[in-house]
Length: 83
Image (cartoon, rainbow, N blue to C red; front, side):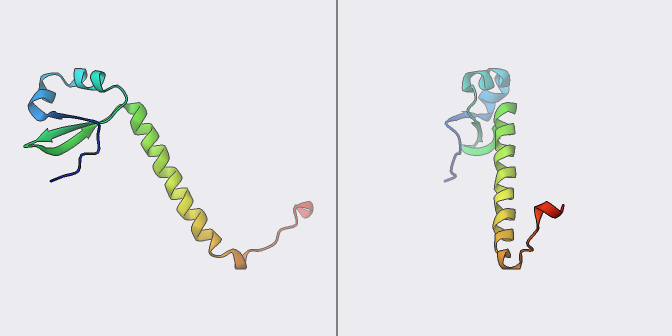
């Protein structure tokens, strides 16, 4: 059994009948489109996609910061008055 990462799900045949209505009904929530009762793909609005991309970028930045903090003992002191 597959996990469905959406509050709404719909069969492929129902989705094909009126895809715009499916998005309209779901609002800002993701929709799982099922094929043979298994998730085939998800549809999301551009607003939700942008939020997901922003979260992924933030996650990547957290990893960069953690990696750099591991080298804290190698940090170089900078005198801001001399810059």
